Length: 113
Image (cartoon, rainbow, N blue to C red; front, side):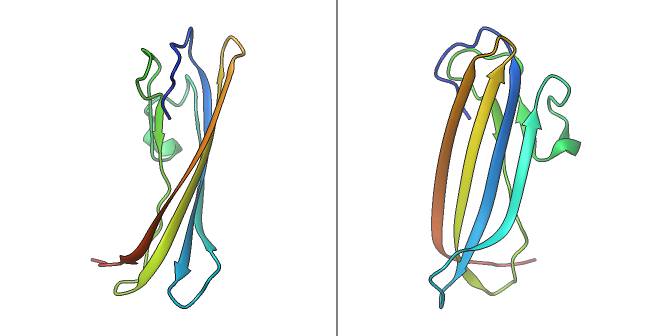
């Protein structure tokens, strides 16, 4: 998440993400994994709270937080993937910023290890 305004102070950012998959012979999406990450002054750069990188000091367009969700796949399979993400940032002064995004990748081959 990137903020387009210079924030006056820090706050709490909550990001909800879901990862869906679709086999080549299906038309509907199935939920594969989900993740909710909360970042505030107590969880800055704390890896035990999920895959998270928080920035307590913000200068304009700099990232406030990076968060992700992932899941294991079966080696040798091909799937379509859809990831959705929504975020809400509430500053300590009470200002609210919200955003959402989705991305899709088709025919992804799982290499495995």
